[in-house]
Length: 454
Image (cartoon, rainbow, N blue to C red; front, top):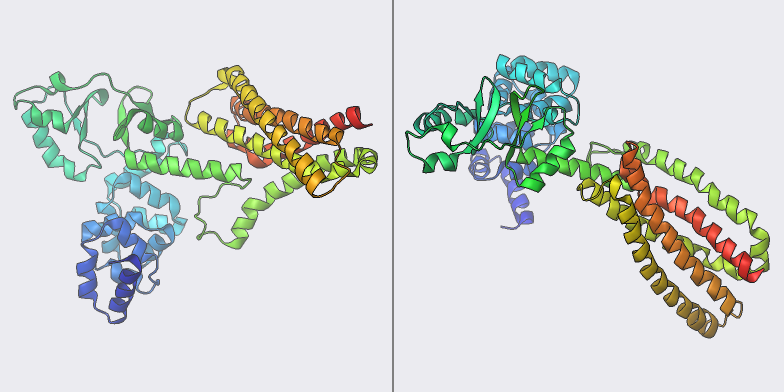
């Protein structure tokens, strides 16, 4: 059944109030798909449809829903319903819910949570935002090194239902992390074998205060399913799971894209943001870039006598500025991405600069040759523009080659310098670099024109 036909069928079932059929359909679906369906349901019907779901499926679906819908449900829940949903949620999901809700709703959520969950939620909320501690869950399987395999498997069976993952188990003694052992290794071992003889002692862990983006990148580097989190005394306090790491990477990538586009980052999705909110996130950058662009105006004004003598030079200013801006953006985006993946660091600046110089020379020569052919064949011969002389073409083409070189040097170095100074490298992306390169390209253009034409 296609997505469109399913939506029509679902709407028809709603109109006919065939809730029993709707329930039979929903229980066969993935929680994320149910949440997507509920996005189009009006607020009056949403609580009714949500109550059709079995308790466990309801909690899993609730986690996947947008904060606005979650708030509608929480407000409409009875205390018993809210208590049941909270009991079925993992701690890290409950923390996410608390962070998204208004204060009055949070108070009610915490009131209906079990004391143990409430304590764990408050503990996680104490960690700095964007730290490993803020995205971890305290629900993991811990084993003692002296346990036999039989005892370990029995413990997993008894406690695993409330844990976020059971595949990797953590061996601890007095909360000190000693090693890890997988369920596969336990199942393949003899019943009387000791956990300490099976565990992997070379464990990679992170500190509660480590940056969440660095932690998330470790998942892609090592292909982890979960990563233990320890405090300053190497006591295990929780784990970060793969799904939470992917959420962090998505958030960080979105934030970098917004900054690179000259937009103040927002936690809301596009359709959840009002025009006023979009305006507030965009206008500061637009004002900044507009003011900074006055430098190009000052440069053009300074050389207006030269432009009056060679009016044809004016026609090529947009092409040179656009080429320079595009060249700088290519270099900056490439380097920013490499920085985010830890492929390069500030110590690699000379290597990066040398590579970009060689790239710029190749690009500059190719563009200058193509530009010269375009000027002499299209502008001069086909369009009959006699003002385009060989000297003018030489000025334009040499400017283009030098502009590409300068743009790529600026584009590759500024993000690395920004990171070294503690700023987000993404700030030095397209709009900012384009403004700088525009001014530089004009200075190069008029300097060459002055030496060759005047």
